[in-house]
Length: 423
Image (cartoon, rainbow, N blue to C red; front, side, top):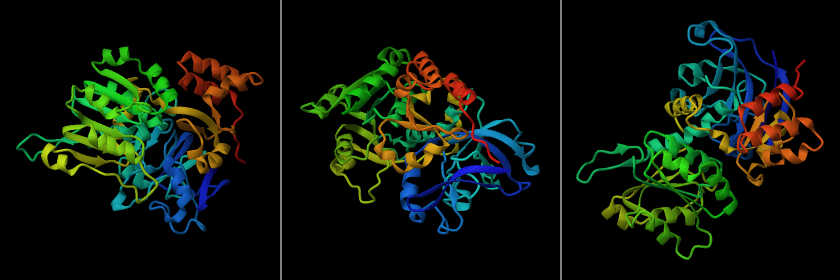
């Protein structure tokens, strides 16, 4: 079977090509990819080429497929896996497999599996590591967002706290405690707000900061205080740009106690140091944001480390259990990661989008791999709809769902947009 896929040959060298997949082996699975969400990690891989820890050294000869936040449908199952998987099932993949200690991952390291493609061959190790995960919810795009959502779940699980006089670490955020998400108005911040409000270990106080008023306005329109209150969470949004003393304001919301859990969603020194300053006793700072600068540093108050038991953790992705939880919450309608998505595009949009990702405003860029479509902001649907009936209907369906991408819009797009065909 032929596939069309974006492959990496070297630094800044991505190519959209059509080629033949090898014959399916008995321990492999053939799958049809429907959607992929472009991640900043793919941008880093494209920029670094073989210098990236997950990219092989010989990509100039044996290029690999990119894209690791994808969802699709199983087409054919090799004999080894017929008792566990079946054709027609929808799936998502946890790319961080850690197979035999290797960093190899779909979307980075493999010639025949990556999210920016039409068809892929899922290798045996994905199934061996329980990283091929069934999705039972409606549509496809939600499952593409399960990987970034699992990063949020993993971060909440990675925080820890102690009891005075005990060396036991109690994993996870403090249930009913004080939580702050700094620089939380972006795509991943919105996902974190959703999870914080609706998970079963939600905080009592949740404060979201940002210096972009428009981002905060959108966040508050999606997550009104009334919805948070319904779940038992007291929610505040704070624009700290023009505050004379933002630390004092943030601490005042806790009655001076400080925060049990503080998440840093931007790799900015000032934000990281502010997170340290607002920690309460036994407070945990989670450095969630992934810096591109390997020499990124920030000061940390070690007086408080010694006397107030403050501490710091960092996470880079979630594990399989985190992804299973994300898929389950999505399938049951508990969380809605559509809040992350701001742009839609086709397979032909992957290369320019990936190579220029930091320059494109907004949140997640969602790719439908079986169509050609210029990357388009959801907020531009109305303008494009003046001359295009497909965009006109997409705009109507998005407005119907509070401005968010949704399964109705996805189905309409897939049913009414010209498909890519392979010879």
